[in-house]
Length: 115
Image (cartoon, rainbow, N blue to C red; front, side, top):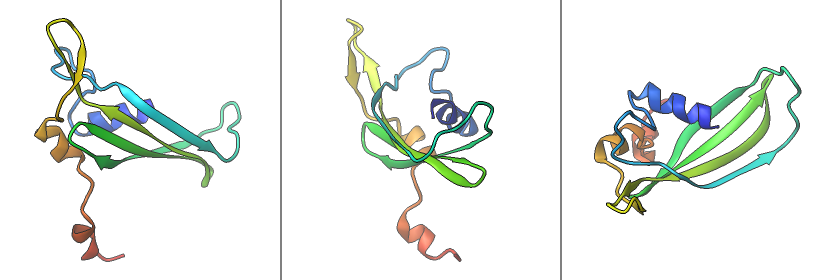
C-alpha cells in the first residue's frame, strides 16, 4: 500500500518525503481485510484512492486484486505534521496546494457525468 501511496504522490508531482521537507506524514491508522492469500510470484494490482481529507489528515482506501479477484481491502490514515524547535511533531493543516491535488471529486461534480 505504501508503494502505491508514493506512486500516487509522484503522479501528482510530489514526494511524500522531499529533500527539504516542511511537513511530515506519519501513519496513524491502517487496516486490511484479507479475503484470500496471494502466492509467491503472483502478479497483483493495487488500487489506492484518497477517500477522505480533513484539515490535518488524509485517508486512503485500498483494494488489492489478483486475476480480477479482490484479495484484500483496507485503508490507511496519515496526518500532516510539522516539527517544532524541540523536534516534537505537532499536527498541522495540510497545505492547500496538496489538498487541491488530492481532493476527491464531489458527488455533485460526478452526478452529471455519464455512467
